Structure formats: structure tokens, C-alpha cells
Length: 262
Image 1 (tube, one colour):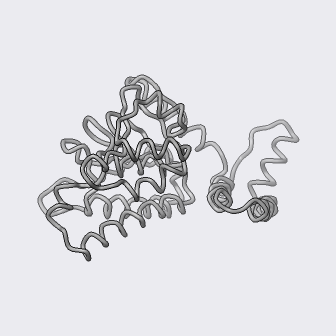
Image 2 (cartoon, one colour; image 1 turned 120 degrees about the vertical axis):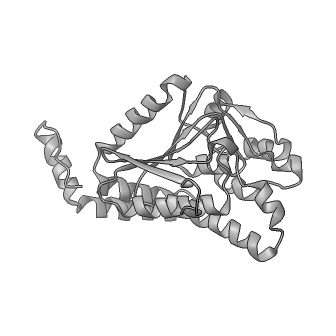
Image 3 (cartoon, rainbow, N blue to C red; image 1 turned 30 degrees about the vertical axis):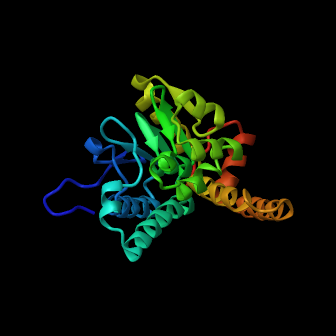
């Protein structure tokens, strides 16, 4: 989506099976305005249906990844219908990313706050530069970060999530790593290469196997234990009948590299 006379809200650049989606409002720290989320949602759906894409990277232009919702926009639109549509769009975006068969990696730098921290959390993987700061600061301005808490609290412990929510304090990249919010922290000059290395590692796997695995992971993670094992067992059975499973096992037994069909 592009507003007439302006730059696109989200840029897409495909490189060898990896789709890079860049939030393109860097001068404002890439706020998740309604148009920004609609544009990102469109791109998420596009890449999810694109068979040529194996991995998706979400990054931000400018000095920071994402500062969360656009507070100026929200302050202007204090109508219940509009605000409900805003948060419904946000919920749909996060759900579409989780439901996508493609793995999503967050390339995080500068800041990731409020809904920006939520965006990091909903990605399957995340790598941050060592100068990145994270926060759920809504309590500081009288707007508790309830929707960001949904994704963040599923990444880190309850006590750490409540600490972020109740204090609104920034945490540094090292703390985010120790709490499980990101997978790795690297020097800023190494961030792009680290993301590319991770994406290429995942890209080399079978897309159909990764898609089934991702779907099953999110189905079972919040289920009770018997249900989780049932879901996982059913998925393992389905996995055995995939073409790429036959190829993978045959390649392993014959000590050769697999030739995936997907």
C-alpha cells in the first residue's frame, strides 16, 4: 500500500529465495500506523503464497527497527470504531505471520519498542545488533502495552514480561538475549551478514518440511501436554509421507546431499 505522492510504506526485495521486507518510515522510527500495518500485511500474504520464497526477513529503515504504534495518529482518531479497526489490523498481521508457512526473521537495530517489540516477538527468529534497546513503555504514557504483551509473554518468562510492562524501562540487547527475546546479538556492522547466514541455513532445508514443522510448533506450544503430543505425533506421521522426507532419508542413508523438491 502506498499513499498518493509518498514512498511505499514497506519495501520488498527478493534475493535468492529470501524476501526482505523493510519498514520504510525510518525518519519516524517506522511507526506501525494503520497504513504501515496494512502494507506489511499485504506483503506478508504475498510472500506466504510465493513458492519462490523460502525465508522472510523483516527489518527497519533508518536509525531503528520500529517504535510501535503511531501515537500521533491514535491521538487524532479517538473513535472506538477506528481504534478497534487499528488493533484488529495489528492482530491480523501478527496472526498471518504466525500462520505463514515461511519462517520469519527479525533484523533488529536501534530500538524495538511497544508494538515494535511485539513484531520482533512474533517473528520465528530474531537477531539484534549490540546497540539495540527494547521496551514495553506504554505504562509511562498511560497506555498499557496489552497487545504487545501477548507475543512478548510467549517469548520470555512471565516475571520478565511483567517487569517490562510495569516499569516501562528499556532493556539492552544483552538482556534481551538472556531473557530469550532474541536468538543472537552481534556487532551492528555484522548484523546484515549474520541475518543472511541464518536465512541461508534455513533456506537450504525442505520448504514443505519447514512449513509443516512451523505449523505444528505453534499448534502444540500452548496446548496441554496430551494434546501437544497428539498433535506432534499426527504431524510426524504426515511428515513421513512427504516427498522430501523420502528424499531426505534416502540421502542420509546413502551419504549424499538431499535434492529437495520444495
